[in-house]
Length: 323
Image (tube, rainbow, N blue to C red; front, side):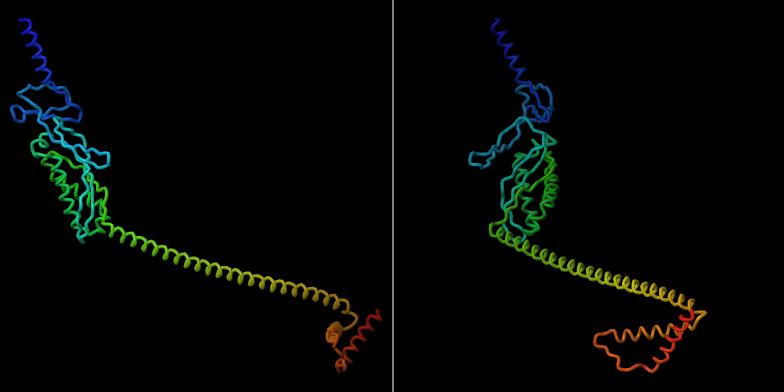
């Protein structure tokens, strides 16, 4: 009897333990009662009725990398639904552009389950459905763009694809946060042509930059020569002005000195003779001296007026003799 009670007690304990479920943070558990939806368990400690109630599993894809570097997917069933944001790395796929160029694209999808009940009951295989939906819409979007537009329109493709996927997966209880195109790889022949085009463009820009440099250098040289010529002309102008001012000042000083000398002569001869005759005689003698100052100059005649000048000199001599 005691053994039966002990067995029953152990069975009750096992029954109770089997019904205990601890839900982690950012997880949810869908509980079914006799095959029908019963409740959604939130983080915390819960107890369900074993056999009558049971968690409903959901498909989950795990990606692993082999030793050769190849990535492969493993599909598992999980009784716990992860409500955190999930990163899904889609395998590389070929897409045809609007100008019939086949390119290879792989993408990253960031999504989050926000309604666990819809994620379990609205779609049979959620990861595969999201993958196929993404691939289909990616082909449609790239097929509307030429190769050049595709290569430079990643942000546009990401935004449009995210908007389409977010709207389509809303009924599955999934929120698509963003989509990122990782690599866009055109065919090898296209890559070579693009590299040649890029090199040609770089050479063209280098030639333009070199020509612009030569042009700017020539302009700067011409401007420098112009400024130098202007400064030189300005300097010569200032020098000529200064020389002219110097000559003028010298002539003024010389004239003032001559004026002072004449005034003194006039004052000295005012009472004793005629100053004008004296000055005329002195200027005449200076002129004769200049005429005969050269080495090859010879005076062969005496001007007629010289007799008058000489008489004036003789008169001056007599005035000084009287003094």
